[in-house]
Image 1 (spheres, rainbow, N blue to C red):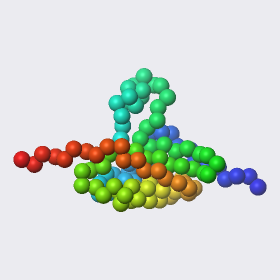
Image 2: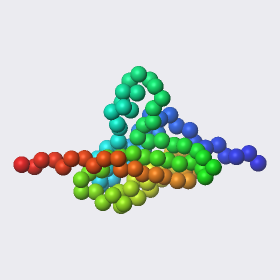
Image 3: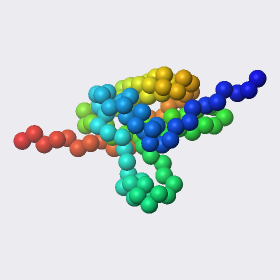
Image 4: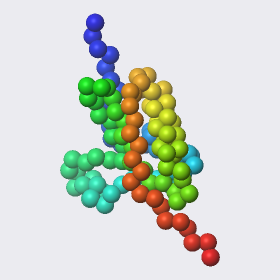
Length: 114
């Protein structure tokens, strides 16, 4: 019996899809993009965006890098982002993703309310 093919997304579609799934979750400020990544995109060299999907012996791994709001409870945020992303992508692709890794790479500055 042949293996069921795993979903394949372009980096842009994957990032946009995950953003759609998580943008309204309390504590999410934005997806994380480092300056070198932005430069790499401009000159069209190999890049790894804020959302990645890789396959290994354990199945599909979805990795999400984000910036949290200053008031976010990080374990709760990571859990909500992971669940929302997996649900959205499983529904979109029709194939479940086995694992998710949420990395909070930065915390946004608190807005000055003076």
